[in-house]
Image (cartoon, rainbow, N blue to C red; front, side):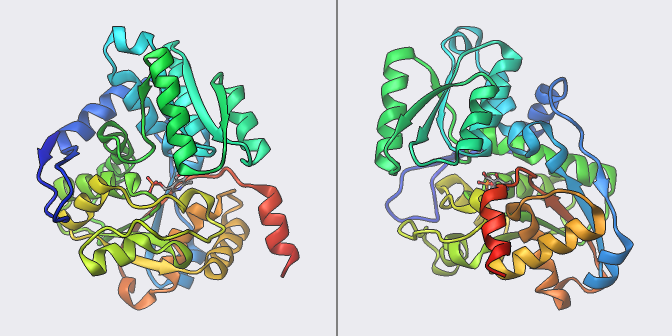
Length: 333
Ligand SMILES: Cc1ncc(COP(=O)(O)O)c(C=O)c1O
């Protein structure tokens, strides 16, 4: 890991970012617990996209998302005495479930702070993996205050969903498997929320396959990373509005530094394009991916000329479909 001045900001303090050694260490650490997910191909999608698509199927990962990789690495990185005090996070989505399951693999307590308006099915899943739930008002300030209270009371270690270097390194292991198995990619595309998956993937691609260009796929209604890279400073005020519930997090400071360092490009897709890609993927492959995954395919389809004739790796980040939200979307036509 390296602590470097954050050259991307004039006033911000140094940020800590992981390196490729940390990704390799994470891969070894999580190997007994995480699945090595398959890579899927579809001739008809290749024909439609005009390129060769290799889909890394993280919707088939434990808890149904790549999030288990980072959470598992964080949990198994802890020294024995720290681990015994447990872990805490605030998340009503895939990271909460991932941290709960990772903690269970180590037999340690896990606390998850959830907003009291969170989707009931997702909260139930976090509870089912054995986490203690702490409800709070649906604001960032309330979530952070509730986390701090749990930390003060229990000594639990905070595991942030995308800025924690252990999490970023863990997320980089999906690209490690993909690039290690099938080399020679011209491009690698991943969904982009807070930038843990994209940051980890960029570290891995730079070390393993310098000729591979790395792209993040971000919703038009949550384009803070796109704007941040354009402006050269992190946009922190945007209020996300997108059906991609996993992509509503704002780009983190270490994630921003990694994206700039590795010259990552962000491609935007609106929700309509993402839902078209989702339907297409469901129909052609019979695989249940969520909108936050489908956006990566939407970004490729929306930028055919960029990828024409190329070999493209796509990380399908998860498959935890919010059927209620999707039902409403399809009902609206
Ligand atoms: C399915 C899915 N895809 C992508 C993301 C975005 O990941 P990151 O915040 O690391 O960019 C998330 C985050 O929750 C997610 O659940």
